[in-house]
Length: 247
Image (cartoon, rainbow, N blue to C red; front, side):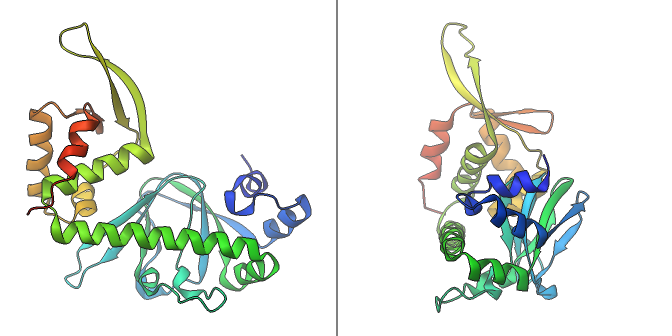
């Protein structure tokens, strides 16, 4: 899969001509990152926009105490960067996007645009600007919901929400037989390896409390583990747990 093919198949660049895609191709470059490499941090005020071609990237915020809070895990074909540096036809920018950190969760390959070059693309193609604004709005809504969950929901509910998020974005549906051998139900294997520390940073809890919550779900037959992958055995029960708001 080459860079030109990737650009042609990105939703934000759909319906553009080959000539337009060729121009966008010339304004971008490819970068390779190893697992745990820092792509940008809040203090660097990154002036780039990135499109993930291969691997996974974690987007995080740093608390005032220096703790990491993972807001998202990105998969191939997703776009990221400090969009708070951009202005969209007078629409208020989202300052929280300037506080993000981006780090390679696995080996990763990205397509990279300079801020000025991406500004040029937005000015040439207003439809792309509208799509980017919608994406930022969705991200803002998602992160706001996550912060609300952190404030009002129990650890059990937060970890259930996180596992549902991982199943929806990285889950592979499997069919698994119940112990009776007569009935079958849907299972999801989360096709991304996360440590307990990374899961704790996704839900905003200590590693110890996260491990206790995961063990409880395993004991109740809701999840299991396959090497470092999580298997969700009962998505409905997880959704019921996620609805509780009491701490």
